[in-house]
Amino acid sequence: MRMAATFGINQIVSHGFGVFLFAALVPLMRESIALSHWHLAAIGALTQLSYLGGALLLGLIGHRIGSGRLALFTGTLTTLLLFSMSQLQDPLAITLVLTCMAASASISWGTIVEIIGRCARPEQCSTQLSSASSGTAWGYGLNGLLILLVVPVLGWQSSWLVAGGVGVLA
Image (cartoon, rainbow, N blue to C red):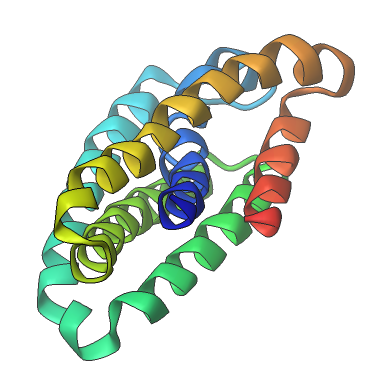
């Protein structure tokens, strides 16, 4: 189960924080950043397209680069992007970073599926995948804790820093 736990933590960072933290923080971010409804609609559409594009890109290049390298790269990239979100004020830069995180999350999940499928015993594959995928829900729950415990004391920017810190630990 160590593999599932490792990949579950990856899912906390890549999906729980990388995909869903913005949705949880956007009401607070809108108070200090000029995020219009147009920006939010564009972010929603572009991140979905980017997630799909990441899956397609993985299909094209995944076998050339290797799942292990891609898993490390996407974890590192998402961590750096989470840290950068605490500093961004420009809606276009925010859109770009969120779009990159969505593609990275998609590639990350694809690598996890490939690694577990290749390395886990066949009778354990579904358990390993289920456990790893639960990291998304754990991350979503942690988003709520960030909003309840961190944001009131340190502001919304600190939530991105804490999320990036979890990525460093992962």
